[in-house]
Amino acid sequence: MDGTLQINSDADILVPQDWSFPVPIAYGPGRLAEIGRRCVAMGLRNPLIVTDNGSRDLPFIDRLGRVLAEAGLVSAVFSGISPNPRDTEVASGKAAFLEGRHDAVIAIGGGSAMDGGKAVCLTARNEIDLWDFEWEEPPAVIGPDEAFPPLITIPTTAGTGAETESTAMITDTVKGMKFCICHPGLKPALALLDPELTIGLPSSLTAWTGADAMTHAIEAYLVPGFHPLCDAVALEGLALIARWLPVAVREPDNMVARGGMLVGSCLAGIAFIKGLGLVHAISHMVGAEYDTQHGLTNAIVLPVVLRYNLPGEEAKVVRMAQAMGLAEMTPQGFIAEIERRLDAIDIPTSLSQIGVPLDCAERISHKALLDSAAATNPKAADAQAVRTLIETAITAAR
Image (cartoon, rainbow, N blue to C red; front, side):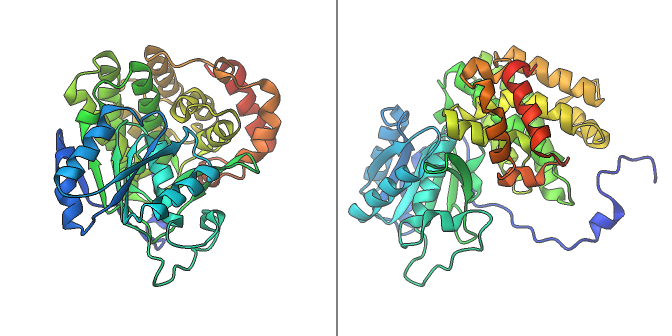
């Protein structure tokens, strides 16, 4: 050892890896104006705009339609996606795609809209059951006449990081659980990041989605294994989020802060190609049952899981603390700073404050362990350990 912090063992560095990194990204204020000519260049004529039901009447939907029309494209809007997208909504989106004879999907909005858009793409041109695309299943065989339609993603919040990757979280309405669906053949043809679209986002939603991005960066970085590409973007994403999230909440019209957060969120989303952890495993199942806002749920649960995960991760804590510009670099000091930052942006201190009852803890604990994110948590946990984490998050997360 030469005195430097060692994150991976020497043996890790010799383990064969398969890395895929993301997709074409167009970033900058005003880039939405390019979407028409970009669609024409891709040979598209009639895209389906997929968004969530809360965004249907917001100005950016009308503006997107106008830009497409000015380029000679026909489009329609499907807005039947809820904050926690459901399998039944995906089926309705597929029906809209087929009825309108659409040739692409433009998913615009927050993470729900993008997850819904991806799920519509996965099912639009085939008769494969939605759950055959579940993460744990072998990739479904796609026939020559079943190619996925092109997918364009346009985030209007800085939080989910869903714009560059192929996974989507969908609620199984029969089981009352969220599952991750994906296919290696579906990746966005373009992710368009225009910070102008996030101007005017309410401070509360800015805080919730920004805390979601922070959680992505932290959880992804803590995932074990040798993945320097993901680790590097996780730390840079965390640095941008640490700097600009408080400013974006305080000054919602600050374009620099909005741009910094949009890129930070994107980087954190790229980082979780490596995996996530128990924060997301718990939050997914809480959201599936109680329809809680995903970023807000993550923000509440985060310090509880950090207290469980960080002992033994001192070297990584130092790297994260350095990225955030913190003076205190111990696990205890890092957690205290995360809690201070959550307090500063008015994140509730318990899940009970957002309607999650204590008696769900045992049920949610078993569901959470089935979530794909639980498998990449840095510290093993059984149902009792997860139940204790959930009970703490419900009663007094911080």
